Image 1 (cartoon, rainbow, N blue to C red):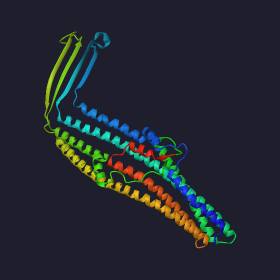
Image 2: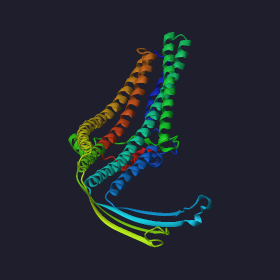
Image 3: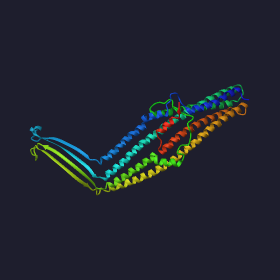
Length: 449
């Protein structure tokens, strides 16, 4: 028959495990920051997001640069000089004469297909830059959510490891007491000690992991977050709409930003190819010039009188031969276009694969959460049965310790399964290009303090 003191010890562990389960599901601290607050901070403070905005602004200037080749160029020049001459002994600026003048010139391309197609390419590049900015903003949602729920994972795991450590120490203490009175062998004490040591190490390792994940969250927002809101135990784990994988694939093919970028890159390369072909075409320009000058040189044709000159010219330039440079650039542009077409095809295939995998992950998560919940019930029942066996002498302390460990592991697996469902759902939406700040708002409604 088992010592009554040991029965008193193991009975509270069943209640402790239930308390631990609720703790790991909420994993929160008073005055905790929630996901929406952290996301708002990240929008302002995340260096990668700020870098993406700066790069968009830089790339946007390419559109203005492309437009410049279609607009007129206007230049203004002015000059003044003082000339002297005479014997070196009496040389002086006072013996010289002054000249001044200015000029205004204008040039406008009338026919320049190369410039036109280059501008169309710049428009596609500008649209791609805007898409990359949206992509960076979408990535920020997933980045913040990943860092946030990584913290919750560690908090949940730490709660179970701490509970397991407490339970293992209690078992060790009771085992030592029973050994001291000669009821059990020293091997039971060694087994209990090993279990207690392992639990202590697991707690230390998970505490370090939690600290690292809090640091990762701080690196995004620029602020410390000692406590964050936990996920409500009532958070629904249900299939995501639409419920058909083919619908998600179709949605992703039209909305995924990687595909859109590949499409815009191909469109830009097609315009580049046309521009390279057009470089072999004639160009027509019109130019206008006006010049005014005045000189006090007595040898000038119009001494001390202002002179004006103006002109309007229409010029035609026909490229004939440049050592094969134009033809080589044309072939290069079309080869580059073909490469972009293949990149688009690869992007679509990769996205289809990623979307299907993400969809199957969500489907699996829904089933896994239910299975993990049942596993906790089974582990709880197994622990209770082991405790009863220990009371009647058919089980020993090692069996109880193993049952406890199985229960705590089942709790960790359950918490991870719920977090996996949240993250896989967001990754599926990102693959389809439909993830948005509204997802953060909706998810934040299920966080509790």
